[in-house]
Length: 206
Length: 206
Image (tube, rainbow over all chains, first blue to last red; front, side, top):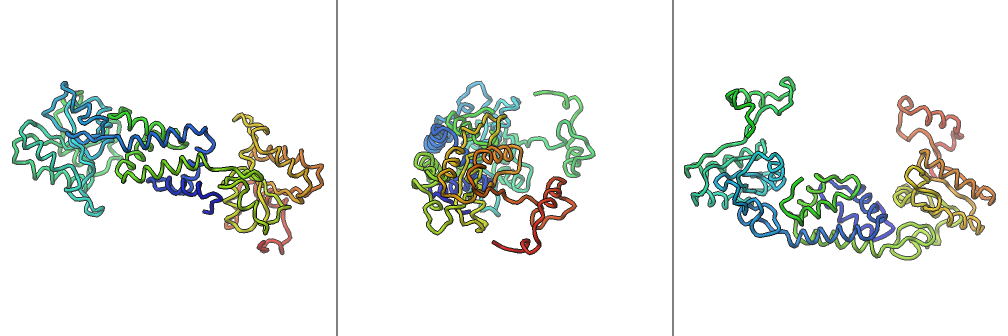
């Protein structure tokens, strides 16, 4: 791609560093900004800079936050004995959107994946184990992705906390609500039969 | 979408103003920046700001440029009597990449589209007509999209310059190189028969 302007080329190159944004998309986005009032580019740049330099990670759960302890961890109405372990900030948002969980979270920041060079030391696992050993927690809910890396991470955490005398649970795997059985994959369907639940529980909400 | 951080929310909202970027994609991009070194966000923001505030449009052809007259218009080796009329800066890049055109360009900045509220006065049509009337041009090549708006714009330009005694041509429409006839649409195939060319010309390159 040949550019008639170095300024344009630089902006496109920086934009195309973002995941899933190729050179052509980057050019489209940058030319869009060029057509809009100058303020839009200023607002975008400023909000990215502010976000990157001022955002904090909650000292307790590692969720993003504007203060040292995030709103969820600082909320006395939430059950601080029940910790839901998730990979990512987006998972916290997804679970919060369901309105079904009133405990607190622990964000690992990823999952163990040797192929990507991510080991337990790069994740917030030590602080979770310490939190559990402090004795103020009664239940850990493992809510990681249902992938090999997720299962590995689940098992690694379980190995470190299994002697701590707390309940360790995993979110239910099974057929999605609204799904038809014939289209479900065999592993999911098999697990959903092995881990069947009492019928009375199946229409309980919370 | 509920955010645990106002800074994050603001960055995501600004990012999702870009075309084709929804809230979820914006969140993914912003969280990616958060995981990268701070410099990446600074480079991105700074290059966007520099681009938006310092970029110029060539005073002759309206292409983006770092100086008042773009490289193409300032190049004495190019044929300044032959002007290729395009909608957009991206079209200049696309034609330049072919290496088949040695004339200069004129960027309209869009096409006439009453449904989007774009009339001739919003486009760089007047400066094109003036350029033609100045008498230094021998041929105008209309290279707009083959859509109703493109055709309307072509016709509007043609109407204003047809008395100026210059050659007005349009880029060839036909079957793409490498395409099979049976999959071509009827209009394209029909046009390619009506506008057939001498066989000797079909393997000429330049």
